[in-house]
Length: 247
Image (cartoon, rainbow, N blue to C red):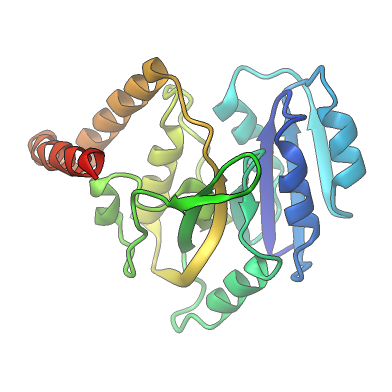
């Protein structure tokens, strides 16, 4: 059983997947499997995966019903102690990232933590750092932390596999947010990696999908944290957004 299961879900990703594959293959810590779940790409994605994938690569290419269905299929194949999702275009911050995460987990005082997590920076297609993610991962992560939004980027969220449920496919855009909350609800404790662990490809999203994602996220917040407290938090979120917009 490998220590990490790294999952990459992709479809027609020939323009973005190479840095991801190189990042995984270049990790100094080698006790991992890399599961690539491809949606039946018709471009050069599969050729690139076979050329650049690590020696632990496991590739399945088949049509699926959507992103979270593919993530569920890959998660069902995972055998690692911890699982992390690394999308096409996203990379580990350095070749030592997995070693750093592994060390933090092993040094945790109270057994195996439910989640190991760190910070994320945004990068462009040329891998230039654009700056930090607008939400900062807290030093002390709990179930209540996600009432303030997705304070830890999904790609920087290393979850113990025995705590990880299947993704709720009734959500089209925010099932990852719901998934993280479910894990934190069961986690016996979480360990913070003091530093950047993920370079996240900032491509932007369409306004329509962004609005749908925010609506789903609001409903998820209401489900776990209550409607009235969530409504009050969103008033605070609005002021935070306006302050960031003016900068």
